[in-house]
Length: 632
Image (tube, rainbow, N blue to C red; front, side, top):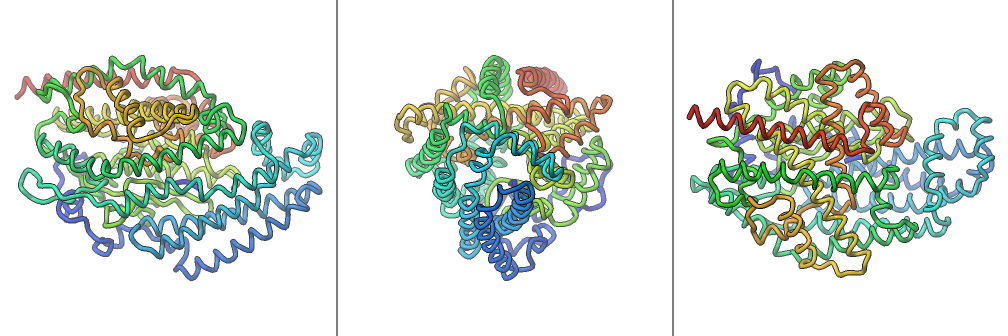
């Protein structure tokens, strides 16, 4: 399971100065609306899961029966090829039902995290998920005790078992890290404990934490929120940006010791599980399920460090163009154009995405349009709604997407990004059996980033003037900075704090902030200005509660850049191979799936190529800035 209305096209080319609708105006000014204030067409339709919670309750009870039956099958599962196949088939049925039960409550909770009943349903579903893990923990060690010759004979005797070849080969690969049945059961029983730090952080930051109001440059009160923070930091008013940053970070930093405790708990959990399974380190344990060599992680960090001069050059361009002594964090996102950043309504954004992704072909566009038209998406920020954006997909229901659309171009790119996740899920699940219907985490950000890159190229090619193209080139640069460079910095931070934990060093707010501060200064160079609040910026990053996840954003962007370049250049078989990548699901190791699509992530080459693209975009940025100055 993974975390994701089209109107008639209103213009033949993108117009940045589109009229702002009332809903769009609410996105960045005044009070955040309640969910009841939003039109139904902009809210996801959860009836595709269940018509109501009574129907959910019926499925929940059946899932409990399924788990009991799975437990009873322990005695017979390995008696013969037939009993093994019977167990695997029923496990898929039970897993699909349980995924449905759990996913529904997750979406219901995220609509408004203030409401206690959806949270209670979610907690019940999560407990059932943990119970299912405990109940089936015996399976992996029992299979690994099976003589290799027995498995070989069974799959020849019963051809239906051959679909599980990769699944069992992957299990055999990890034999040294699979424990006894009782030990596996005990580890499975820690599931709710492992999730506790992440849940505590989520409830604190999404439900309990309150952000203050700030006065905008016109004297209007604006309520701060996670969803609005990134938009407001693009304001042309430096004084306003600084106040937004300071007030926003103060809301987090007042809980600095609490959040450092939740993150430390999550990290210590990673270390515990790695040691329990006899891995060399928590990094080895995190990369093992995807069969990704540790060198891929370390090569990413080393390669980006080799390109620091290019990033430092960008910071110097910013410093010079904004006429600053130093670039502070609240200066690092504002577009290098005069005036306010462009706005775009949700409906125009949808129409633009439909046109911009045309190079992906009708086979791709048809289900994508269905997603936009059939209420797969919860669009706007509302009171109590979970921040950020995601795509969630399970095998028996179409994908769903959570958005907090704020009327910016960044939000349009986020929408395209999440739709990429959803299409990856859709193609995987329509072309793979349930056992491979979920793609490996290492691949999770590739399709989403391909959408962003292809959309960005479409927009830049159709820019109506120098100012519009300047904005879009700057956005492409920011995309690489945010997705490749910053995520690599965060990946290095994760590595450092995990190594500290493995050495037995205390993980306090002060020690983690010191590590983060040093990294920021190293990555962003001599043009960067120091703010004390940046030292603790790590406290607001939810991805750190999924150990060693953020590096995948960087590697995925580099893979996506290579794949999208092939598609846009119309290389022979490029689109066919890309669709094959989407359809592969989890049927092979992720490095191999990408290699078949035309990119080899086991080498630094895709990372170097992405940073060379970053340098080329800087060249174009400087040219456009010169034209802008000369014409002004």
